[in-house]
Image (cartoon, rainbow, N blue to C red):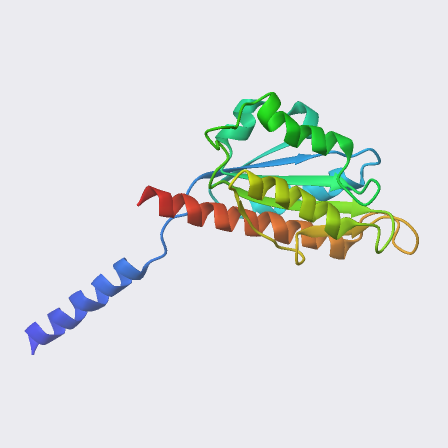
Length: 196
């Protein structure tokens, strides 16, 4: 009977040890944005807060024009935010993506391959092109063979900043935090998988 109890105890201990959650993988999330009015910057800060909510996550927050090649290539995930300009990403964000090749030389090696990518956008009106803006950001990431994720909304987080919704409200900020957390979670999963 003692042997049976000992076996049961050892099996219980072994099951607890092997089923324990793996420690979080250490990841770096780059949040790059363009903001002329401060709205997109506030959403970027929400993304940062969400990403930081996962232990093991380091976050770098920069305006797109300040991002270096080292920032880009050392990141496990890149989240890009833009205001809507004529139903598309701003010129500064487009230049940021153009610089991936022209300034940082991502091709022909696809240096961004298997990094996690996501998008967020702010726009004045309810249907001002926020989804199109996020999709064009995600398209640039897909062209670089990145793993794109959503969170906070179908294509990412977004906020309406004029009319009945001046500024960033708590619900919109919560969607930015949700996006940041989702990106960090997926980046940690990818990092753990790559380590195996």
